[in-house]
Image (cartoon, rainbow, N blue to C red; front, top):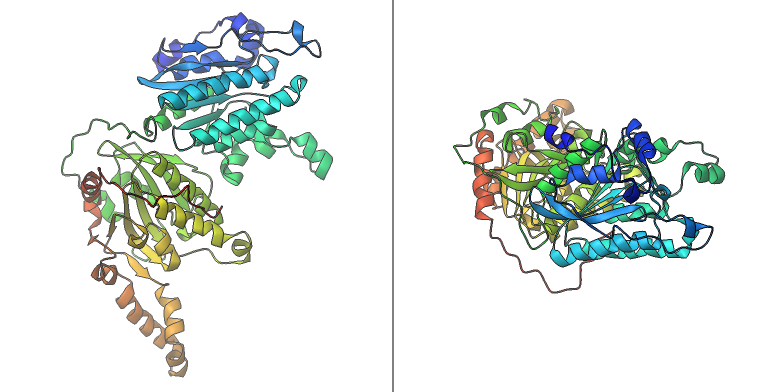
Length: 513
C-alpha cells in the first residue's frame, strides 16, 4: 500500500480535469481524491489507457457554448488490476459538479459496450450532482442508456459501483442495478429526492447524511454492500472484492496458491455452548473453516441475523451464507431473506461455489413480518437456492427447524452435499413446542403437568434433536465431527469442481420479487 500511495500524483493535468490546482486542493482538504488519482491508485501502475479524453459537450443553450472542458466531467478507459483487464469510469466533480450530459453518458456507454464485448469487469467511481439540467431530456436519455446497459451486463460481467461523492435522483439507479455498491463514509450519499424536497413535501427535516449517507444505507436500507472510511479504503476494498470474482460468467475465479495439509481445525470443537438455546458467534466457525484472513463480509451491518460474504477454501473462492445465532437467534426474517437471496444469485451468476452454515430456529413470527411480506421474501431465498447450479454444500451446525430447514439449502432443493455436526437438531420445531402440541391431552390429564411436559420433551428430543433420523433417510450425507469440517469441505468442493446442470429451456424464471 505504501508503494501505491507514493504513486499518487499531487499535481494533475488541470486541462483534462477542467478545474485547476485550487479545486484539487479543496478536494484533498475534505479527504477526497481527484478522479484521476482514484484511477491511478486503483489500476496497476502505468496500465490506464484513456478513451474519449478530448470529448466536450454539445450544448449551446444557457451560455454553455463558452464553458467547455476536455472529458466533459468523466474519465473513461481501461487498464489492469493485478494483471486483469478492467474497464473503468470516474466522474469528475470539478467539472460541472460531475453532472451527466449527453456526451458524458455516451462515454460511459462506450466502455460498458467494450466491457461486454471483451468479457471484462466494469468499475464505476460515482461522484456526480446528477443530470445536467441545461441539457433537459438529453441528460435523462443518457441515464436510461446507461441503465439499459447495466441490465444487459447483469450476470454477464461483474459490475462494481463506488459512491465517492453525491449520487442523487436518477443517478442512483445505475449503482442499484450493479452487483456491488461501496459508499465512502462522511463524503458520499445516495437518495432519489434530497432533503429540500423531503422538507417541502413531508415537512420532515433531515440532513443529506441522515437521509442517504453511508451509515443509513449500510444499516437501514441495505442499498450499499460495503462502506469505506475514505477514498483510499474504498479503493482497497474494490480490489479485494474483485479478487473473489471471475472476469465474466463464462470463467471461473482465480485459484490462489495453496498447499493442502491435514486441515484439521481443533478450535472448531470448542465454539458451541453446552445449551442449545445459548448464542454463539457463527463468524468463529467461518474463520475456523476458511483459509486464514480471507473472509470478506458483505452487508455486514444490515440484517445481521444472517451472514454473507466471500472467503477462500484451499485457495478457491467460495460464497458463504450462514445464520447468526448472536442476532435474533439466527431466525429468517424479511430483511435477511432479501439480503441472502441477492447474494446467492450473485454467486450463481459468477460460478462461485456456495457453503451454507445452518443454525436456524425458523422464521420470525409477528404481524410486522407477515404484513411486510415474509412469505414472498422467504420465497425469494428458497427460489434463489433452488435456481442455483453452482456447487452447493450445507453444514447443519445446530438447529434446522421447520420450513427454514428446507429454505437453507436442504438436500430437497438441490444441495449437492449436506453434512451435519453431531449437535444438529432437525425437526418441525423445538422439542418443547412440539411436545405441547403432540402430547397436549396427555400432559393435561397427568398429576404433574410440568414434570410430564419435561418427560415428553425429552422423548421428542431423543427422536429428533439429532441428525441421525435425517441421515437414515439420506437427507444428510454424513455426520462429521467439528474439527474435520474443513478437510471434508475441501474434498467435497474438489469433487464438485466440474459440476454441470442442464436447466429446463425457458426465457427466464419468475422469481417472486
